[in-house]
Image 1: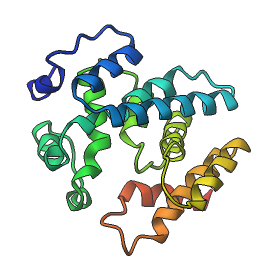
Image 2 (image 1 turned 90 degrees about the vertical axis):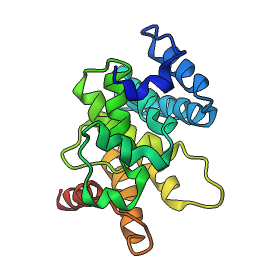
Image 3 (image 1 turned 60 degrees about the vertical axis):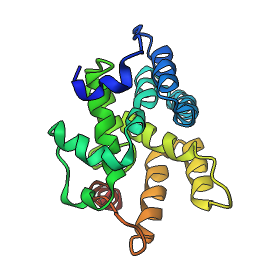
Length: 204
């Protein structure tokens, strides 16, 4: 394990049971907010996988690990990514937290020993999505969004949930990507992966 993570793991004893280990990890780092969100995303990911008659094991694992980098202060995320030689896109320097999905991928592999590329891929793109995605990518991406309990009215979330229940996972993905694209002039960053993923769906 990279020494840079020792301050986040020094009192965590990993058992190999990823659900128990995630509870221990976030509890040790006093991040119960992310833990609660993580459990909600995992439950939703399992539900969606079953709707599509898929084994939920991979999406559950990806969901449990997708936000583990939240224990790293946002102000240090870019610095840590650079220290770990993670590729940081020019656009990502506009918004420090944009690299948290890549950090989570690295930490899932380095701390929790995940080697399954499908799981790592889903973690790495859970915020922005990406082109040429697989079902694990799509399910985690959608689960992360529709698990949010946001104040106020958010029609795009209702539309995403309806699309999922109709087994239209690509439509659910597109609804969110298009929602972000429509706000491109007021956002700090519209990630290049998101733009390419949206274009791919438009051409499908």
